[in-house]
Image (cartoon, rainbow, N blue to C red; front, side, top):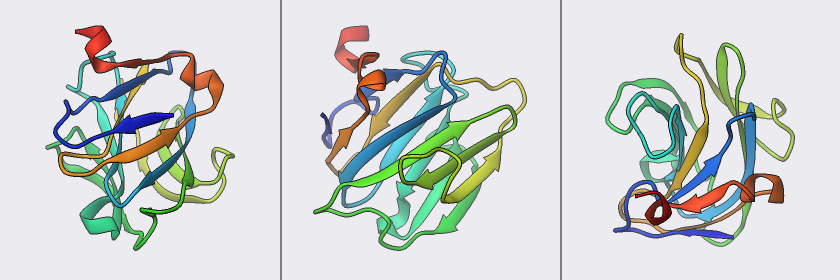
Length: 153
């Protein structure tokens, strides 16, 4: 289990995804489940940011980095829960980044965007924003590649 807390560095937990094209995870958070799709471990420049439960748990968003442009956004009122685990997947294939519910990538898709040209993903950072906490669970395959921000820098 991975815990993310407010006031801790933005990239609280990293998962190595070098050979993967998707990640499945369960999260319990009131809002702002942030998943950074990064080209390089520990580097947020040129990353894509997926926010599930953005804007007080009313929207879900894909952005070009934390302060970058919104690439895609949908209404998703109440998609996260403060009390219950919710399972999601994110995939980054050849040309599209997609987000959905459940344990099977590319099923139950609710958000997608064209992937920028020249973009790849080798690591994923997990966060619950600046003011929220959350609990994340990943399959053991992904958890083997997990490490804390402090272990990198």
